Length: 234
Image 1 (cartoon, helix red, strand yellow):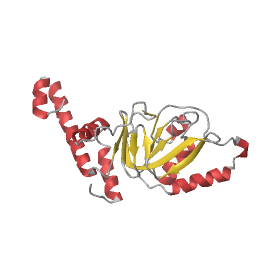
Image 2 (image 1 turned 30 degrees about the horizontal axis):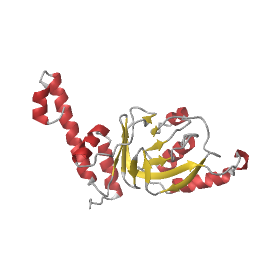
Image 3 (image 1 turned 45 degrees about the horizontal axis):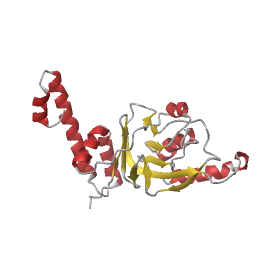
Image 4 (image 1 turned 60 degrees about the vertical axis):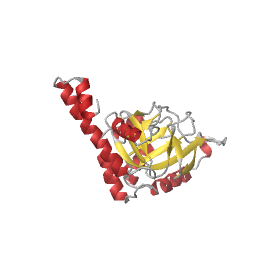
């Protein structure tokens, strides 16, 4: 059983994690026996230099089964649902969205991003599907990782079918509270019930330091073999 940290301690550990990078974390998880924690390729950050880490807030969407036309939707009802949704989020979380492989509408957009950032204090979102309103999201500097983009609205096409439960995102199981770390190289999930988050962070920091020293010595003329023998990393 992994140690349990307070929410505040978890957020501080996530801040340290953001100073590393996902390849170092993946290498660490590999060494700890967790070799399938990186989401599949194709998750593109709209802000390439962004890096976010935080406890997962999970959402599940699906293609709507209704034949309801757009004019039949009640905007006040939609606003109330979204307000209730964002009211359950905590500052420092990262949203993970499973679209059940529906790519016919934007699963995320400007409204969700703006509300998450300014109402919920959420750090970013990882969407296993397409998004829209990218320029407007960039204006507020809200980091999003997605599997593409599309201009169509979700209303009338997509239903929110669940939140706060386990989901699959990018081929990885994500439980609420698991740590999501995303940067320009991709997205990795740290299962906190199975792993000591502090240990993962410390080991990832060691990997970063070893790789930094390796690069420095190679630039100064050391051979690859000598560097590997010294640090066990290239």
